[in-house]
Image (tube, rainbow, N blue to C red; front, side):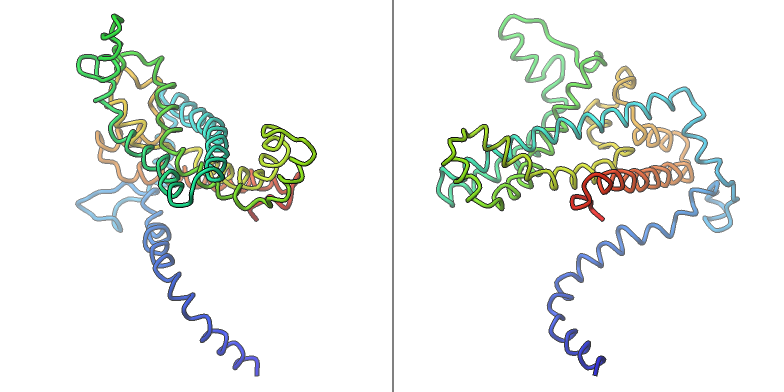
Length: 306
């Protein structure tokens, strides 16, 4: 009887299994399949012998990241940039999400559907063109504007001190569209009667945001923050390598674990070392997610991811 019941449920649910099949297949191929190659991190790959017959060297590849003087610098840059991105990105995402939710109340649905896409589309369009075209000393748009107002041009690619601000701006702008839509979707789901009651009691718009909107965004903020913490030992390769145009002068403020490993891989063609770095980043990210979730669960179990 129990078997027939399960069979009947499977027949009823087959459309849902078909819907999730492409996503599951993608995860298996793109996320879980490469895990079979983790053993490469423990080998010194010899192309003449092949992967399987290459010598096993244990943890030697892992120690490469910490042998040089750059180890502290790349670790510090990777962690501090990600902490800064999480903090500023969260604040800007919430502020933009609130602004979009207010626009939604004032404009017609069709117009709003166009408006809501702008932050996401513009964020990627701007980032696609903000590199050399904007920052070149001779032909860059920013220096062109400065010259128009009689100011001296700035040599951006030889001034490491300015790049933390440039990278912060570009990263926040790039992710603003996505995060603001996530927060706006949460705000739309808040019971309107809460705001109506607050208005009856004389609460201003700022008071409604402070005492209703922001507290009810807490679970979304925690979830997105935990996910970001899991990638704290990773960095946006395009942002830290392509934006600075691989300028050696800027390494002190743009060098991260990912760019350091890539440059080492290009110079030495050491696949084992590159695999070890990826393995190390994944393990640390996994530990960070578990730790952050455990802390959240201890103080607010209902907001924990698991």
